[in-house]
Length: 257
Length: 266
Image (cartoon, rainbow over all chains, first blue to last red):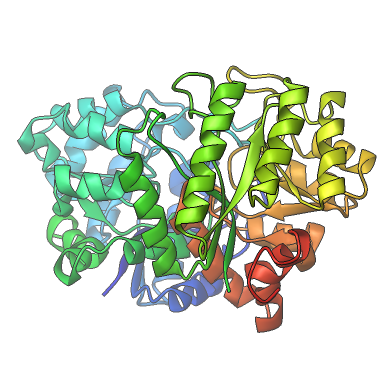
């Protein structure tokens, strides 16, 4: 069983990216033996009203059992509580919020309120550190990256909130993890999409120092080719049990509970 | 056969205390992936006693010697680029001669000097005489100098390549950072520039754009520091290319631009 917790549908405004349609995403899942993908609506991440992409997302995933919607919630806009409630009612595995793209302070009052509401609703909150390498972004793509300090602040802000942080590298992960109490760190999961594998020791070290239970399989597709996350696991000999934990069990036990 | 045209190793005078482990890790990851040949360079002291991209002559010699030792230790698996700094013109030419005579198969230029600079000309002339390719470090679409290295991007490499039509150039790590679309646009008509697919970037659409811009005959497979990204691109390419085309990217294009006999059976 392999669950991709970090996938997108829809066009990217800053580059021509193939494979953004539902059909093409399903083909990619087949190609990389991914059984289930948690998908967000990519275009609306850049809209003034990101929650307007949720209806299309729900409608699309309803036609394909392997896809699960991760709807957007913008806590600075009216109606966000309803969007969160709808996500819970529809059985979404998580909701996402991208404060740098929404123009919100990532650890500001609106996002803290959302974090608490997610905790109360038992819904993990997904946040991306970045979508693209900062060295190649479009000149008009000026949203900042999610700061590690904001993740630390959010996990401290509510004792029930659970965070799924995507596109983080080793330095970011270590800063947040060891800058948090064990109880706080145990409520954060990291997708593996931006962590370097062998011959560097980033992934191997993180698994040893943080514990394998903190990591979940994520690709960032179609902005990144999903083969990368699979190849990373294939290069690192984790053993069957720990590999299964990353590929699906941590998501099921930690995020879907 | 699978040739990694952009590999690196370390030695005892680099900042990496774990240099032995990292070298071993590269070889073991290569075995897992199926890499038959790592064509590697060592950039001086990797910053320990001179800057990575502005290596001193002494560090260059030590690094090149360390690489030659690795080549001798693994004659079946490792090939070498001699790394030089064009600012030390006489040293660069001598070091190229010495290292190629000792068995290296290409020249590596870090970003010690902009790719359009005339100081690169004697190095390119030597590459032509010796029949070896030049691997130029490139940050895609870099139009100004940044701390730590000089600017040199696809446009500049295309200009250099036009001055030296008899030399085969390799644009380093298309996925290594920066706007790769800018590089690909600059290389469409630069027929003596090959694109190395290495780098940590695994952007959706990058491989399709490489094929569209320079064609399958000018693509070289490589990894640089992150080997899983190279393996991922190789896996993705199996769905884009015919088996015969895939062989070009895996090794046949490389065998064509390196000196005859650099790889068994080429």
